[in-house]
Length: 398
Image (tube, rainbow, N blue to C red; front, side, top):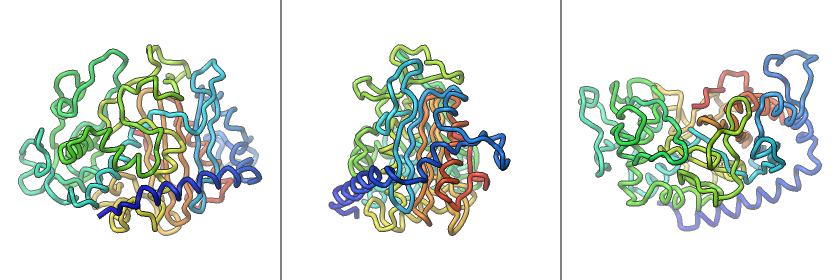
């Protein structure tokens, strides 16, 4: 069972880390090296390759703004925004600016499911139809001998189709969770169905994650946003985070959407909506996402029981993923990570369990992934991380 003290314990721990970060960064030479040490990705490994500032690389790629949080040795050592929320303005990004983070939503969804497992309300290895009351996974030839389970859904081995989802513009009707699963109403995706035997192999599926979203809704009796707030956002003091779509302007301090040329998208409110919440609907800030990653890095924390945390951060059979994150390396070079890409935003997060280090990078442009690569490499160089970004672990930002 999750102890009643978890929220207070985690909030106090993370608040202390945030305060410490302000003092550590003031005279830390690693920060200056990080901010001025970016190298063009095509010139890596060249001794004479010029170094650039973060703002110079934002301009180079046409990315208006980025928010970054860096942690090292289990502490947040830097949080800052660079550039602007809207191109052509002086409305600066800061570490509390919210961005759409695409498939990083799946990480929070996994934690939400595991919190319900810790309460005894869900089991990772039970057929999900046991929990579903408003819809059922249709029986098929693929499910005769193997069950669709939450463990397999979170590791993308459950057998489902539908890789990802389209974003929705202002004024467009948004589908319900069941409509997404049926591919009906205003939904723009195919019906979510099994395409191979559960457990057989990896096939990344936002459709499968949406099944887990409905499990959460049916078991808790809460809307998905309310469930995420109760089980993840409030315990970790993630006050800027939400799964509400469309995101209301009243949320404030929102990074506007930009295309691959760095131009503001022609949207009345300035951003899209992602109704497939668990798969791609999270809005969050660098500060908040840093709190989340630190909770996963904290071996002695109360957010997840040790056994479930270990499951989350260990590769499942026939998969590159644990229960949510992708896992690469081993021992000192083990890393859990995930990228995110909706139409006009790119995001990435990673954590290194052995050293308590890692990074969060959020951008408001369809070209933001190029900036991610260079920012991440600069952090690696400045902090001397043994987890190397050229070691093959960087993934497409789904």
